Amino acid sequence: MSDLLARSSSHWSESGRAGMEAFYTLATDDYRHLAQAWDWQALFETLQTRAGDRPLRLLDVACGSGKFPNALARHTELANAPIYPIETALLDPSAFSIAEARAALPEPFRPAAEFETPLQDLTPPIDGYDVVWATHALYAIPAEELAAGLKQFVASIAPGGVGVIAHSAAAGHYVSFHRQFLEAFGVRDAAPYISAETIVATLRQLGAAVDVEEVEYETASNADDDSAVEGFLQRCVFDDGVTLAEMQAKEPLATYLAGCNQPQGWRFPQCVWLITVTG
Image 1: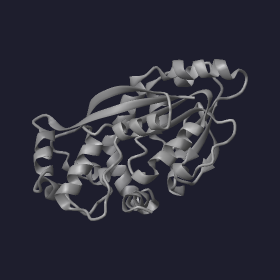
Image 2 (image 1 turned 180 degrees about the vertical axis):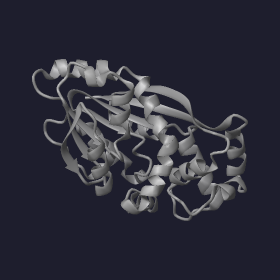
Image 3 (image 1 turned 90 degrees about the horizontal axis):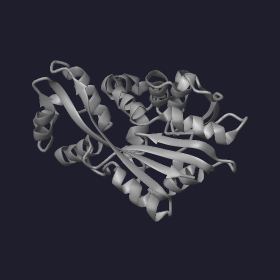
Image 4 (image 1 turned 45 degrees about the horizontal axis):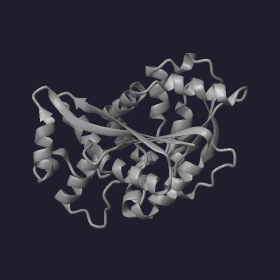
């Protein structure tokens, strides 16, 4: 297991709950932006029409703690759509994450299956899924295993289905901040996060039909909320041993964070690619 994947996995555990909750103080808003970026209700209604009298099947890749289904339930009219309950399969290397996501699933999502495995080790079912998504989920996949993981992602999409990957571009906060953190603190043997550009290039090399839509927004916090910001930034790099003050004193993070610490509060620039893969 790579150093990055090992550190990520150790944070997705009961012992890492405090860090996870600190991160989501700010990061939960990522999923609101994703929920509002598309007409998800229309997508699911179209897929339900194609599926006929059976429920839709969804695979949630690296399901985390179930924030995206909850954002859809909260910020869209999906719960009122003329569709059957969505049979949801949860995939994650962490049993903790699967349990968290299962407990948090709102209507119309219903837990149907669980895969405690990395994406690259998944054996997709023959029938596939109507929807396969990975929302801010593939950053820690080892670069040498990315093609294998994306091959399984594409193979999981049923004919006529759709795959959606929401992921930070290289210029977005999650990828850019992690790269600068490694440069500032010289983290040995740590690989940089996978970027959306790399994912798209790899999908196209695999022969997948890919479309991209860019979503820009800011992750915001009050000017005096340094504790929440520290927890957010530590989780962004899966390292709770470096304080916010230390980050602010070390280049190139010092300059980056000074630009994010504005008079109206903290503002972290996000550039997310919504990547669509058709089955």
